[in-house]
Image 1: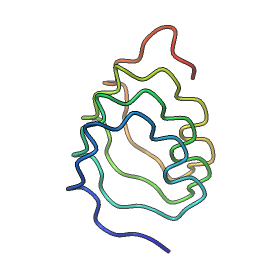
Image 2: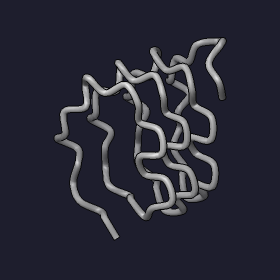
Image 3: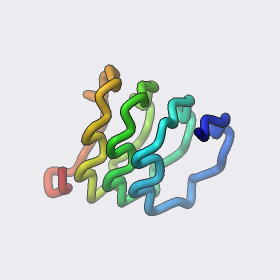
Image 4: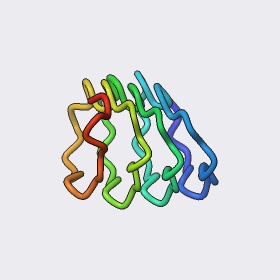
Length: 91
């Protein structure tokens, strides 16, 4: 079980976040991450049954692949309506 504080990680140059917390029990705040360069969020929290953190401040406007990002993330009860996702992004 990995649940360490990663909120101070500098991921500002990260492009691919796919499957990062897939099939895990990770549920720690990462809302301060700068993911604005990220393009691939495919399956980032796929089948993570406990994740429920606020990601509303994330700038995901460069994202192109969001498929399965939250599939099986049953605990997530956050409002992500502020996300600006491209019309041609894979959802």
